[in-house]
Length: 257
Image (tube, rainbow, N blue to C red; front, side, top):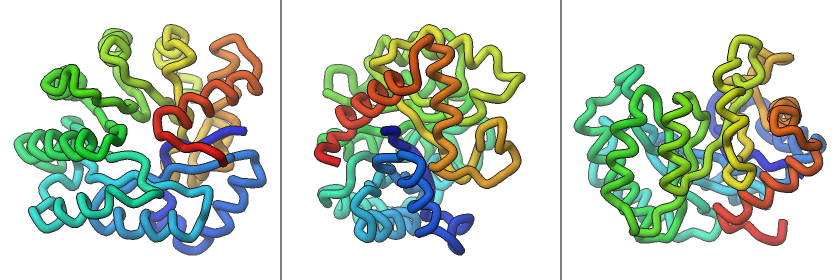
């Protein structure tokens, strides 16, 4: 069994066939999905999706691209949803200094605020980081010894960045871009990551694996990325699937499915 710990099935790219996408995921051996919200509206649709499907769970938060849109009302509404049974994480939160679609001040402010919610509700964080590893790690260090746990999703940093986040106890996941022929450096970094820190994700509808590059990504395509990662780690797909599924179940506290 594989699990997709990061997808965005609530987005409009899946409006016409969302239920069919989930069925294809099940048919391909995906045991459960974690749908990750990116803004207030996305939090609402993610919650609704998790209510409709037993094997779909929710992560609620605001992506750094939308940090400037977060007001007190939005923050309070999201906080009010975090205690629901199907909510398993706070995210997608983080810093993005590549596109800079929200101000640095706003990104920093809301990153700290959402980390505070994660600690209050004892939930892991799902972290987005682009061109901001030094700054994001510095914020995480402010919460040292607070019991914060989580995952850096769609890792895109350097080997030094990886060493720093592993030293702090975080997990990491890779997307389909790991399979692109030109991404040798990313594959080399994966070789150094302990198996017990790895998670699987698609980041659907983005970053389809190499054989489907250019298509809309979906959870059913996860197996190609998983096989590539297993090959890099020198183990069978079955062993890799078992390990990463156990890692995900432990981090997000999902049992019995």
